[in-house]
Image: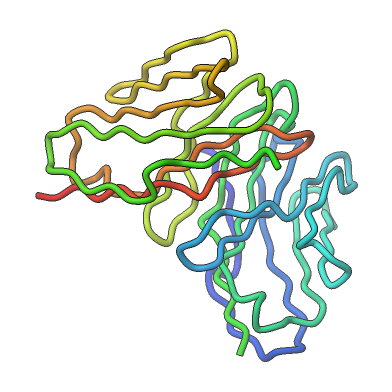
Length: 117
Length: 109
């Protein structure tokens, strides 16, 4: 069964360092998302991506965050200068359909745990 | 915000009993989804119910949707230890899907 894969599963970094989290969505999906979950808390939307551009982003997704799909298969989330409060589980998800009127099922990866020291 | 709110926040029941979780949301929707998350894992889609549906079944899951009350419920019948997880309702909002805070379900042996 096709699945979303994420790497790394766990990354520890020093405050101020850049981090890149990688995702390989399901191959025929068109819509891609990043969510984050601080330990034991709610799943927060960060950004949605379609047709090689951001379709929507949350207030959390400020200038230190960026996403790209560099090679047609990988979907990356970059955090330029990490802060302590960026420590969280970051989930990538993909879908055949958008989050709008024809909402499709989201397929999630297992997440990348980011620890900022 | 379109975020749904699940109720209760946590629920502990004996194995074999039924578990009911509720979700309330704020604005009109055309569908609502439920997801499950085992501890430390990714979310897994359980079921989608459309606004023109009142009830939907999938195995031991039963979902209801009351658009007049802006609420949904998820019923898990004959609970098993493996049902221990967090359950989230999710609603569409423009080009994203928004998750509630979840209900932590614990099945006692």
